[in-house]
Structure formats: C-alpha cells, structure tokens
Length: 211
Length: 218
Image (cartoon, rainbow over the protein chains, first blue to last red):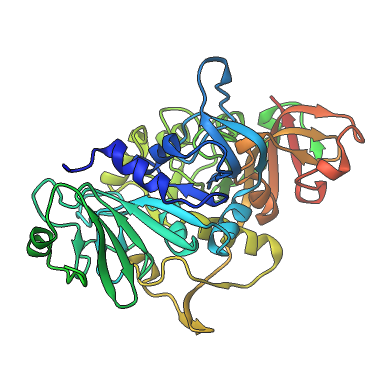
C-alpha cells in the first residue's frame, strides 16, 4: 500500500467518527471529511459561527450571504438545523459538548500538544480564530496533516517548536504515512501506509510504543 | 425603548472620538455595512474596534480602517486572503492589534453585558496568548483569568426589529449580534425591516428591546 492521498485521509477520518456524533471540522483540509461521512449515520456538523446540522456547500440559487460556514463559504442547512450566537457556540465547544473536532496542524507533540495557528515568523500577522477554543473543547481532537513538512522535517515531534494552540489536547493524528494514537503512556501506531514501522521509528524522534 | 431612526446618519450621530466600537459580523454575514459607512461619513476617529475579523476587501470595516479612523483592533482573526487594508496598516505600524481567541472574545463581551467581573477560561492555557494572565487550577484543570470587554457603542446587523427594538436574526448572520448588543452602552442596529410592535413572536425574539437603543432599516 502506498501513502494516502488527501481524499483517502479524509475518508479514513470519516470512517472513525462514531454514528450520532456532534462534530466540528476545521477550516481547510478537515472540511473535506464531510464529503466522506456515511449517509444516515446521524452525524451532526457544528460550525463555530453559530449553527448545528450544517449541510453541504451551497450552489447556484442556494447561495445565501447570511448562511456560511466558519471558512465563510456559503453552505446549506439540513432538517433539524439550529442557529445560535457566538457566545453559545463557543460555550458548547468549551463546555465539552462536541464529541469530535478535526483540525490541521503545523506540529503535534508526543504528549498531544498542538501547534496550528502561528508559524512564529517575526513578520507574520497573528490570527487565531477559534483554533484554541476547539483544541481544548472537544472530547476528542483528531489532527489531519502530512507527516513530514516540505523541507522533510517531521511534524510529529517530541516537543513543538512553533507557538502552541493547546496543551495535551490531541488524541489521534492522521497522516499520509501513518495513523497515531496519543495516550497518557505515549504514542502508538495504528496503521501505516507505504512505510514500514521500522522506517517510521527511524525517521521520527518520537518514541513509538509498538514499533 | 429604542428610537427608530430615519437615516443611518442619525443613528450614528452621537458616536464620539476615542470610542470603543463593537462591530458585529463574521466576514460579511451580519456585518452592519450601512452603519459603518455612516460612521465613516460622521468622522469619529481614534476608535478602538472590536470585531471577529479586521475587514474584508475594501468595504465595511475595511473602509473604516482605510479612512484611518481606527487606533486599535481587538479581534480573533485579522489575517485573511482579502484583509489587505488591515495588513498594510499593521505592517506599517499604523494600527495596534490585540488577538483574542474567538470564544474568549465572545465570552468577554458576554461577561461585560452580564455584569461579570471576570472569568477563568481554559482556552489558551500554555500558549503565547496566556502571557501575563493569572492562572488558577480548579478541580485539577488549569484556567486563565479573562476580563470583560465592554463597548461604548455596538454596531450590529439583524433581520427584523419591531418598533420597541426587539430583534430577530437570520441564519448565521446572528453571530456576534446578540452578545454585542448586551455589552455596549449604546447599541445601534441596522435591520432589513422594521415591523409593528406585536408583529414578532415573543417566543422567537433573540435580543429583547432592553439592549437596543437605535434602529434603522436599510
């Protein structure tokens, strides 16, 4: 088996979301998980700008400038949708009511620290949005990312070097080469794609408990 | 009870230089563009603006920034693909920025409107945005102390108002409106339509009239 494509990663994440879950999909690649959720599983999508049971992207006559997702893309509503204001939207997040959120990342540490909002570059304009609230709020935080950055450096690291979004909040990491679980006793590999466990252990500075 | 204004100019006429202005909207959804345009014409300057973003494109909040009326922006997400006005001012050192996590931004305004003097929040613990903030461990979890964020004025958009100032919103354009309405000394609302008192279902009113000062239909 070869490395996963982005669509295959999204399908894998979708498969692991339990039926009936309330789920927030982060902006960017995590949003594509919605395309792979099984019909009839009763999974309810939350968008932090104030809606539950968000539907697919709006097309043609469906486009309504007053109905968008957190990425400001026009979307649709499904039967059973509900709207609420921002303080309520983040209260349901921070209050631990969401089952799963899926986020992108620059780095994830072996203890589940997440860095996904700021590269730390001196000329970068900081912008956090809802990333920090999501990271600490959902019962389970799944990350989707490539395992290695364009420069070849690993993104699953002993300690994050980028500014943190949240401490010890990530429970599972989906990458193009492997899926990892992060638990109190350390990091384990669930599956690999196009790479052996031995090679994975050799290329990462993180201790993998089952490699 | 709210005053129903004939024009947006009347609605913003009393905004003073140096005010803290809460501006609703998430992107363009719920953005009170007509009130912002009137504020630009009104001329108030040296403003602190609290909003989720720091302007999109060249209209609305971006136009207010471009007119150099804003000293400081407090927001969660200034940097976007179309935030060139803010980006230029920031890089030139011509505007101050306070970045606040989105939920903390909303909750700080909720606290201001609800008479809460501060709250312990788990968001941002262990991150650069917790720098300098008091930490407290409650039931084994670490929180940081966040303070209320009040406005002199709120400019928000809603769907309908009745003549008392009760408001209903539409879809995700609701976003910050109900919270900002509670957090400002003077709340000014642009609506699609003003209806007669009694025409809104009391069970469906989202913002009760007690929070609303001025309404204008645009």
